[in-house]
Image 1 (cartoon, helix red, strand yellow):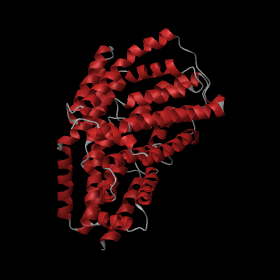
Image 2: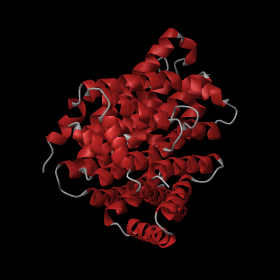
Image 3: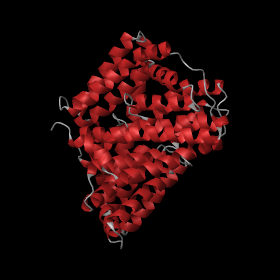
Image 4: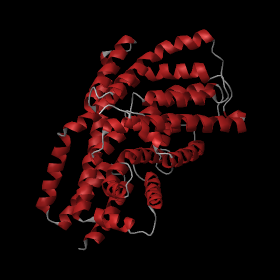
Length: 434
């Protein structure tokens, strides 16, 4: 069978399996196994399956993933997210839409010690939604702010998506982390401006909450020194070249554990829950990773990356236009695929094209992360939206999607700004110790 036709049929098979409800890691792995079986033989397919699973599981660089996941779960279970929200609420809650502004600020702070958008959204939803409902916030603004704020989890370092991108492209993870810092702050500011505009146009969306006294504002700052110190320790160590990303992940996990002891939230039950959640999440990530590697190996055997690269670079378009085509492709895929699966499936094909066009791999990585963020809140998949729906069960799904629409517009504008001014992402990595 013609390899191009076979690749198309296997791709269709993968989407059929996904539509039938099969987990994406298994859908990619099974489709790749069938494709390799038809392309070569059963022995090669079985050998590739076993070797890929083993090699992925024993790769030292991937040990950074469970450590950062553990860091996030311990931080969440140690109630560090509550401290961040209380601090942001004390300083911003009295403004129009102030609780939504505090939610975005707390999401940005929690993202700095978490690294997962879904975990950020789920954690902040349980804290912020009841408070916004107490002050009669419109469900669109309340749920939209939490869902959009959660996306910041994969942009502000540490970020699991950046780790995977760095490993796939052999790009410095430390520089990727630093490159995401300023765009992350810009995203927080952009989302806050979006809320300010929305509540100015319709003040009923987010009425002001009670104003905190100056003493209360200063007191809540005592509770956020821990997350700030942990972030500075991890990122500062990477910036100064004191330790590697894997070492930073381990130090971050231990630091989060130490903070849980200091704020008296540590218990055997908390540690057990954090470890169990880490195992579950890591197993899910590695399953998707193994499935995607198998699928990419099949595509390489079928020469699809070469065919697709030749087709895209052969388009009668300039390099900027080709970049926009690639971003448009990611936007469409974001409506259909999980963010991690999307990165794993496409980067081996897209990255050689981007490199040939002369774009900086670190800058492109941040662009891709920001586009992937969109996929977390765009229909019909929108993982963050479904996370919020699972917590706010009485809010219709279309209401949450309406609520995130202004933030989608804001994110598109922010991506355009980063394309126009790549220095926003590249300046900080250029100053780090080598």
